[in-house]
Image 1 (cartoon, rainbow, N blue to C red):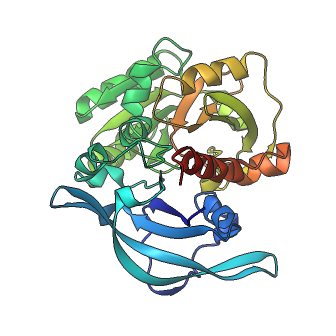
Image 2 (tube, rainbow, N blue to C red):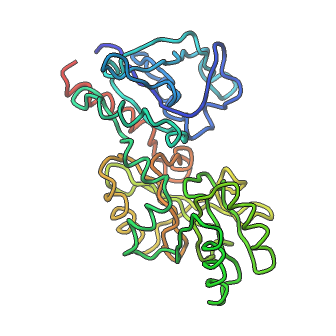
Amino acid sequence: MKNIKIALQTDVGLGLGEITRINVNNDNVWNPISEIANRNTSLMYVVPSDNLYMLNGVPMANAWVLELLNKQNKGYSRFVVTRQEQIPINSLDALIMRGDDIESNHNLELVYSSLDRSSLFIPIELSDMKATKDKLDTAKRFADLNIPLTYYAEDQSEMNERIVSLFDDNHEYVVLKYRFGFGGKQVVRVDQDNFETKGADFFNTYKQIIIQEYDSSVTKGDIRSIVYDGKYVGGFERITGGSSWLSNISAGGRASYHKPLPGEIELCEQIANRFSGLKFVGIDLFHSLRLIEVNGYSGGFDELKEYHGIDLAKRLIDDVYSFKQRKGE
């Protein structure tokens, strides 16, 4: 088999030389890169979303080429960026999207509409990825499920009215989120004493505001469940860290073992299968199985391996190789 050429589309900018500011082995975003490196028939590329573009009608990538510097030295692998290459994206075997910056790159719609899906393995489609990053879309798409009471406002006075209505319904706190926020960022919790000042600061920064009732069960943490190829594969608890009320790992939360709750598997598969263009989906739930949000590239690779013995990165790259074999290459 010829070399497999795999690109990870991400929001991380790189430069020539060894990658030192990212722990590739303990970063869920980069976990598949370590798996690719285990296979001598793979070529690795990293492509910031801004480096995808059209040239004479051909989708192109200004890609960074990764090479393994040394493997498992003191428990971790080291990688080096050797050069940049201008490559036609359709000459790749797989393009794996991660980038959290896709909202800012309006050229991506044209690029993705020009990709050859008969020759290119794309586990994450742009349209569905963008939908998962839009909290207003989530509220509308899953209005038939058990989700927190949710409002949307692009006007500060309307936002304040919605907040007050939730306080009038005896909610102690109200949660404000930026419509396109991620990773536990761009979210605040307000109470009756501080919502006018804290809410004003938040609105002036983000403008497009999701207003939600506060679910007090979040103090116990929440659940991240993973679905791959439409089937539930496992999950883990995310427990709040320190004084924070947020359980996101990136916000200081910690992970622990999780056994599926009654009805969780069926619910997660139902949610994931509403996104036909996402091969793997991370679903955040309260312990009451109320839906918090959906993630198009969820991470969780390390946690699935630790708590359930499931190597999802290996399974993903295995699927790339199987796809290429089916093409007869």
